[in-house]
Image 1 (cartoon, one colour):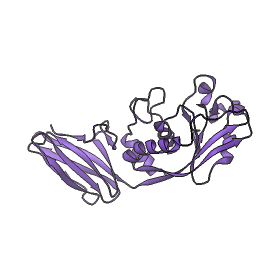
Image 2 (cartoon, rainbow, N blue to C red; image 1 turned 120 degrees about the vertical axis):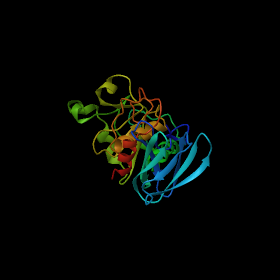
Image 3 (cartoon, helix red, strand yellow; image 1 turned 135 degrees about the vertical axis):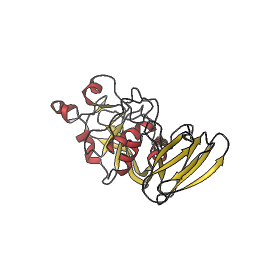
Length: 274
């Protein structure tokens, strides 16, 4: 039976092979290539021509590469009809979503400070955009950086953010100390030395990044944070929960995350978050 597959071996271009039917993100005014194999005796129909144009990019006895070029936002379907029956691919044409991001390098009154240089901002931003932009058409825009943000408080060896259920331990929560420095209209990234979320991390091994659940407009990233950590925290800000089932998923917890793939539901939810 012919099936749709990603034409990208890394599968980081918005193709979800766990979805049923399989799914492809297509950027508005952009394109994505999908492979159909085997292709013998197979005809592909675009059920929603108002949303996208379909182009055959290559054809052989074993496979065909179709280019889906987005014209209007919305969800559509490709139907491949062959001797054994039919196969379906769903696609969603997505608007480009832009998020302004401001970076703060935190220094506290006890002498704690991040060890990474301000030049790391470009690496974090470029890496996060590769993950979010190619899979969900979400792009982080550099708004600015404060290389020396002095906070007149000892934030501790771990900069902790607690959730509401941990309110009795509020003295451990440093969110109130950082929030006054938020740049309005931006997602604020505070670069610290060690980040922790919740009581478990505050009293044990810290994480690489943390964001408080709810309407927070800031996250903290420790020295061990990578570009996928930033993308993961932005995902939380856009309403995505942890994915406890796929270790290769972007939203898998940091302790088990082995990849940066986004799911169909996660990409759609994040892109449509206002």
